[in-house]
Image 1 (cartoon, rainbow, N blue to C red):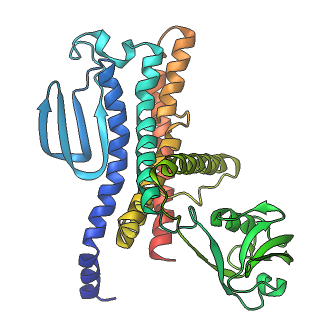
Image 2 (cartoon, helix red, strand yellow; image 1 turned 180 degrees about the vertical axis):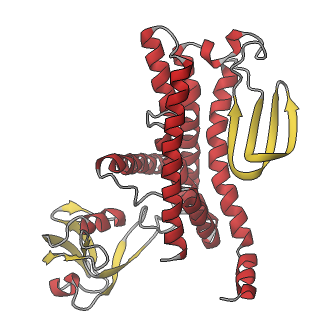
Image 3 (cartoon, helix red, strand yellow; image 1 turned 90 degrees about the horizontal axis):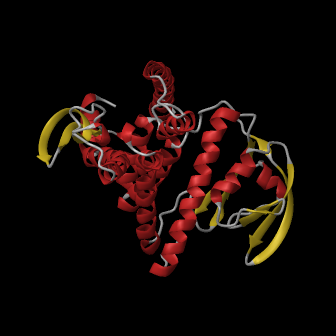
Amino acid sequence: MNIIDLLTTGYQKLPYLIAGILGVGTVVTVHEFGHFIFAKLFNVHIPEFSIGIGPKIYSKKIGETTFCISALPVGAYVAANQDHETAGGHHRTIQAKKYWQKLIIVSGGVLFNLIFAYLLLLGLSMRGIPASPLLSGDHLIEQIVPHGAAAKAGLKAQDSIISIDEVSVEKNTEKLLTLISENPQKTVSLGIIRNGEKITLPCTFDTNKEDPLKGSLGIHISFSGIAPVSFPHAIIQAGTILHLLIVKNIAQIKSIFVKKTAKNLSGPLGMIYMAIDSASKGIPFLLLLLVLINVGLAVLNIIPLPILDGGHVLIYTIEAIIGKPINETIQTYISYVALGLFALLFTYLTFQDTIRIFFS
């Protein structure tokens, strides 16, 4: 691709780039706004709230808080005053608040992310949720790979796999793919719907040529979105999907510590790229991705590590038990170590995203 083609492609994708970046920035802003609302509710002095990060391009003081729009719309922050002299008294600092009030303030970001995700899912449920492996309706075998496990087992195009060893995968494409991936060389019983009739076929999964530790069935799948539902049904469906996504994200975070791998995670670059790609497919795809990022950010922040909301909850809980604040020097050192570890993680994820986006 020459420089002219590159510039032309970049220009054509500029609206999607803007939409993607703004979408990711919106998720972080919602998170910080949750902290802001509960801090103000409990009379904590908040001198500044910024939408975006970096150099300020606009600011306006409303009451005692200066609201800013900063140059880089990929984040947001709330500045809570910890100086009792400038805050208008010690009682207006978060340190002076009761234990339960502190917990609500630091949990506000997670709560608002989940509320925002639920509202997006509510709207998408009434409009129809676009097709994706993570959230899909029916799935069908579109194509059989010659000489693969599916071909040997007698599967055909237009078959629908509804169970693997009696574990239901109906209307759950992600679970189907996961069970195949996790069981290389395993012989299983596949429950199939073919021309409206249910049949059972034995099948031995192959190993994936790119990763011998993963299984392969040798099929190409087409999957459908989730059809629109009425408002009463959407209320229930949105809650069900939100719960499903929370459980999936917790399992993914757990795998980092148990399996010691972050292979399936994405960093800021990956999220922005996915947002740009989703925006190019239409607003519903972008909204669905924002749901996923909201839930991911919420679950990430409940981890009890410093610089995350869960870490603040842990510190406030320890202080409530011992009856006094933890030494500030100790807190500072712990925060620096945690910040360093997260910097390494984000560097690794950015490298991984770069390889995935530009070289695969």
